[in-house]
Structure formats: C-alpha cells, structure tokens
Amino acid sequence: MVSLNGNVLFSEVPITIGAEDFSTFIKNAYKFLQTDYSKFFKMDNLSKLAFLAADVLLKKENLNEEENNIALIFSNKASSLDTDRKHQAAIENDAEYFPSPAVFVYTLPNICLGEISIKHRLYSENSFFIFARFNAEHLQLYANSLLRSGKAEKVLCGWVDLDENSYDAFLYLVEKQGEIEHKTEEITRLYNIL
Amino acid sequence: MGKTFISYNNILSSLGFDNETVVENISKGKSGLAKFDDASLLPEPFCASMISSEKVKNEFNKIGDASAFTKLEQMMLLSLKNVVDASKIPLNENVGLIISTTKGNIDVLEKDSNFPESRAYLSELGKTIQHFFGFKNEAIILSNACVSGILAISAAKRFISESKYDHVFITSGDLVTKFILSGFNSFQALSAEPCKPYDKNRVGINLGEVAASALVTSSEKNLPKEAVEILGDATCNDANHISGPSRTGEGLFRSVKAALKEANLNAKEIDYISAHGTATPFNDEMEAIAFSRLEMQNVPLNSLKGYFGHTLGASGLLETIVGMHSMEKNILFSSKGFTELGVSKNINIIKTNTPKTLNTFLKTASGFGGCNTAVIFKKTNN
Image 1 (tube, rainbow over the protein chains, first blue to last red):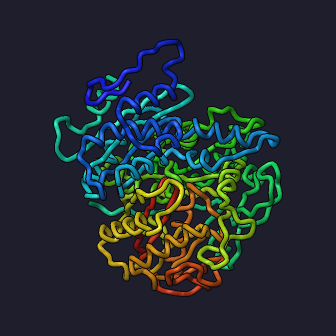
Image 2 (image 1 turned 30 degrees about the horizontal axis):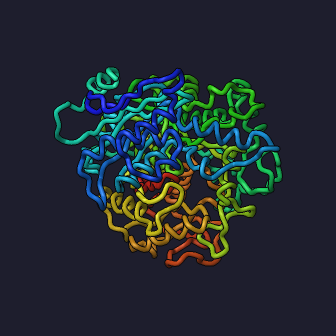
Image 3 (image 1 turned 90 degrees about the horizontal axis):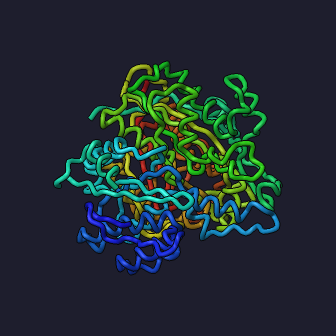
C-alpha cells in the first residue's frame, strides 16, 4: 500500500498468495504513480523503495529544476543486507565466483540517498542511520539541528527498511512552517498508525 | 551555541594499537600496507593494510573473552576502551555512543563463519558495544559510505548542540574482507602495489582495516594536548552519480564552502588539508578541481591512504585523529606514495615531513552515493 498524508494512493489487491511480493508491489506502484524514470530499473530493492516513497512526497513540492536544499535523514534496521546477501552469494563459491559492480555499489544503505539526490537535484546533507527499531527522537533532533543551523531549508526524514520479503517505508518532510508540530510523540504516532 | 571538542582518541591499526606508536611510525614514513596472496580473500594478489587476528585476540583476552566477539568487535572494543578509560567520564544518561562503519560484521555471512548471521545486523554490533561498556543510551549507528567516519564527528556535534548529550563517544571500524575486496576488484579499482594518491602513476586504491575511536565533548575540562575544537562541518551530495565523483567536485566544493562559513574562516586561513586521496584517477582529479575552485591550491595537503589504505567507514575519524596529532606536533606529514603531480590542477601535496605552525585544519572525505563531508578543526593549546 502507498499512502500520502493518511490517504491511500495505491493498494495492491493480492490475486494469488505471494502476489504481494516486493518486486510485484514496487513495479505496480511505480506504474500507478506514473513515475517515469528509467534509472529506477537499475536500482536495488532498498533504493527502489526509498526512491518511490521520496518521489511521492517531493513531486508535490514544486521543486526547482536546478537545485534544492532538502536534507535527507534516513534510517532502517537491515542496512543494505538484502543486496549484501546477493553480493555474498556471487562470491561464496570459487566455482561460481562472479561479483558484479552493479550489485556491489548498492551494498551501502546511503546509495538510495544518492538516487533521490540525483533525481531531485538535492546538493544537500545526507545521513543514513541504523537503529534496532524506528527512532523518532534521534531523527527529530538531527533534523532540528540542520534547520536551526541553516544547513537545510527542509528535511526529508524517515525509515526505509527492506529485509527478505518484509518492507516498509515511512517518510515525512520537515520545514519551518506546517500543520503538524515536529515533535517525537507526533512522529511516533504517525509511524504507528501506518 | 557552545563549543564542541574532540578529546581523547585512539587508533588501532597495522601501524600500532596506540596513538604514540602509530604517529611515530607515520613520522618515520612507515606504511602498514603489505602485499598478500591469499585466494580465500581474493583470487589474485592484492595490497592492503591488515591487522593480525592473533594479535587482536591476544590483546583482547586481557579485557574479555575473545571467543565471544568477532574480530571487528574485538578491535572496536579495544580501541574504545582506551578512550573511555582515558576520559574518566561516568557513562550516564548524558553520554551518547555513535558507531561508524560501512559493513560492520559482514564476514559473518561467509558460510564457514563461527558467528550467526544475526551478527551482520549493525544494530547487533551496536548492542554488543553498548553492553560491553554499560552505556545507558542505545548506540546510534551511522553507515554513510566512506564519509561515515568524519560524518560521525558532525553527528556527535549536532546531538550535543541539541542538548541531547554532553559527551559522545565514537568508535569506527571496518575490515578487509572477501566481500569488500571482491566488490572493489569488480570495479577494477584496486591497485596491486602500494597506492599513490595524486601521483601521475596512480592506478587505484588499497583497502585497509582499522578501528578508531574518539570522545566528542562540550566540556573544556580535562582535554588532552592534541584536543581540537570543531569549528564547522557540512555534508553535500553531488547529485550526479552513485558510484563516480562529480567531474566538477561540486559536492566537495559546496561542503567545504559551508564548513568555512560556519567556522567563520576564509580558505586561506586553513593551515593544512587532510584530504580523501584514494588514489583512483577520478577521485583525486575531482578533489584537485574542488580545491582549486576553492582557491586552496597552496594549502599543504596530504592523503594518509599510503599509510593505512582506505579504511572505509573508519577513514574519516582515523585521518582526523592523525591530523590532530600532526597539528599538536606542528608537523605536516608527507603524503606517502606521491612523487609527481598527476592531477590537472596544481595542488600543494606534502612531499616530505615539514615543520609548520599549525592552528587549523580541514578534513574532507567523499564516498559512494555522491556524498562529501568537510569538517574544520582548531587547535586548543592544552
């Protein structure tokens, strides 16, 4: 399911058991959201998830075509393990040793921040944190620091996790003015209702 | 906003397990790089900076049971213990813990590993380190490619500025594994000979393993003589490519500009640059362009990769610590491996150890995902 500000944008109806696997979901969500971006198909699963979630939010922001100062503060539990396992499988046996640079480059969780920055022209702050579970407090503090110091005009924060066939993305945009107050309790509440 | 300092620190590397030994070896021009021919790591010979597992284990057994910890954990715990003990800071609610790594315990994915796959989760690494020392706060893990180590210093400063913590301990580390070697080799980025950052004959990188740790604090009390104040910091994305640096050095240029602005300094007031210098043709060229655009072409600059190799998520912190000792000793260390300029812009590479009064230095790093981080430090004269 993909939702924006609590409204469902896209929901996958499982036709057969297993139809909700990640690759089917992300492909259908990409089509439904009319995301026309050829580089998308080269991305690993974590980047696809993060990219599409960010795209839903950022395409409503009327961004500048040249450059934007929106910091990215993302987090998850599984880092890039989904792709790490693929690279490991390609080098595990000497007889079938075939590491690929196209896979290896995605064995870092922050690559998805690069993908989002390229698409939306963000020459901005990037940080990828790993926590055992969603950690609203540290995201809130870090975003505040970037806004207060003037290092970012807006901050796109959240959680983008993908491990085996379980995945979730929760992103939110923080700026100096808005309707929902930027505090830990609110962020946690919004994360929990998803 | 109050001041923030980098206080006690430790490097655990192939050049030694304590700062004095490591810095002494650098000043003598000794490199930790060696050639290896080990098919269990890479089908072809390679050059890297590796730490003997036996040596780590023997050292670790003095403080705990080595068999319960992976090699990386042993290295990081040994390194951080040194800093925690030296600081004499009680580990209460006001003390944070940041861990910086790109791959953590990735070697537990290997089929003959003695440890379960769950150890590959970086949050598990965080718990191991938190519980070993009894930190009250959960570890904050930063995994942002090759800028992780220097970005960890920024993050510590930011959490302190938000009054979350008074003190933040950082430990960083990465290993030279089959995983990493095979990946960089698939990019044809490895050099089989000791690397030559910025040199005309550079062909690529050497990987290295290290653990480096430091205390970042808001307190001016009890600082060691090499302590520095953090004056400014910034991270900027290239918004250009995920695995290649910007041809114009855009993100690095912007991050240094922003760090200078926060530090309230101009480019000419920087006494020394500890640059990234991986010795790949693209990276070094990109840096030369960025420093030239910044009009920093005359500022003495080195890369420490010729001593330690590229230590990935630890490199930024490791190289900052060496920079702190360099500044305290008022010596510019030579950029090992460099003989003849091989980048298109004229930059001032340090050829031999040179005495110079140093008051400020800039540390930069760039990494996959297009990230670039710059941090500026000032001597504290303790």
